[in-house]
Amino acid sequence: MEEIALALACCLALAFLSKRWSLPAIPFYILAGVLLGKSGLALVPADEFTRYLSYLGLIFLLFYVGLEIRPRSLLHRGRPLLISGFIDLNVNFSLGFLCALGLGFTLLEAFVIGAALYVSSSAMAVASLIENRKLLLPESETIVWLMVIEDVILILFLSLFTAGAENPFLVLAAVLAVSLALFAAVRAGKTLIPALLSRDDELPVLFTFTAVVSTLYLSRLLKIPDALMAILLGSSLASIRAPLLERLSQPFRDVFLVLFFVFFFITVDFSG
Image (cartoon, rainbow, N blue to C red; front, top):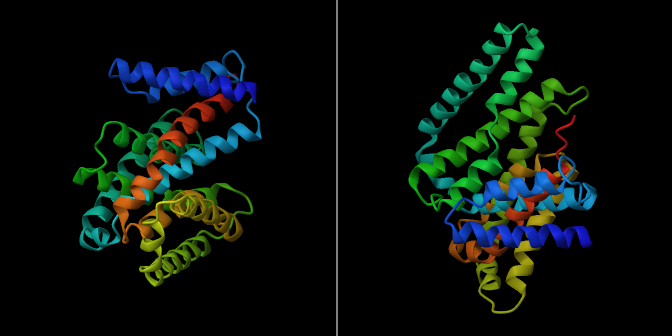
């Protein structure tokens, strides 16, 4: 616990300095994680607890992103988004794939390298939008949807690379079924949920935290990517009292965003 306290104290100091100097805080958090973790002074152990803190940080970040995604906008902008996703796949994947082939890698190795270069870090991209206060801009929604498309295609890639992996089409069907169930449940509670969120006691915060963690349990149970589930949960709840939910989830987002970057990089071992 002393090590965790040390990491949090470093985060607090770095956050203060970044705001004082008007600098982006995320690079400071990453550097702190590297220095405190395996690849640095090894002051904070990379155990299951630190990995779980990092994991929670990512999930709450993506849940907050889901609150900014309006399903109706996907219906209105479906064709441009699909075209953007197609260009993203062909440019980024093809570039890595062809360069790897030119460097002498095998066909399978070049495919893996191309896939790795194609998939962006949703956490890095979204955190940058939040930190620079650009999440509300119209183009930001396109960026977020591209992250979702990449996550869906990542399911197909992982199924190709992993022996004994789940059938990707069954996984996508499960994602679709759970999405419909989430939106139906929110629609059924469109009166009850806003009333619950409007209370001035601990129930709104407890509801938000429980909804996110319970959805993660459901994703593990159904073997559905939890990142997608977090985004879908936020998107389904965005149709009812989204500003209130954003206010409730912002403290989780702000704290867990820091925890994600610091504790993730604590676990990174560059010597490997």
